[in-house]
Image (cartoon, rainbow, N blue to C red):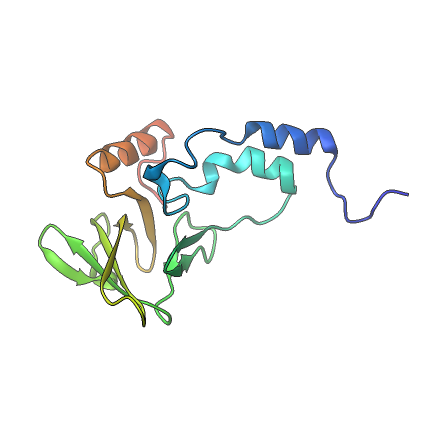
Amino acid sequence: MESPRLRYSWPAYEEGLRSLPQEGLESEDHDSGQCGRNQYSLQPALSALYGDAAIREIYGATEGMLGQQMDEQRAWVPNYDLFFFEVQVGSGIKMLHEMRPGETGSLIVSTPILPRYRIGDLIRAYRPPYFRCIGREMWWTRLYHFWNEFSSLNFDRL
């Protein structure tokens, strides 16, 4: 008798595994997880693997789970109760919640053990309280982000 918990067939599972990216995930450019790459680019593979399930993103780093997707918006909300967030922008350092929509900066996180630790991720502000990690602090990260938004016809919308 087939297990009642098995909701998808092996061919769908294997097809989902084949469609997942195989290269680049262990690159040093992605050492804070999937920063800059969200689950929407993997939606067909995830649907094949898990069926019709609500898939949500989290934003985690070595320092902890910094935020999570709270609703259908394509961005995360920071865990202000666990961390103290600052951002280095062109004009200096400001609190994360003080960022204006469309502004991008380098995230600085304070934990009980690591005060004011710059983690190396670029954060883009959207309509409050939404943010997105667009990638690591590299010279090409902003270009890569805007190219992905343009080529997916998303145009930096939530």
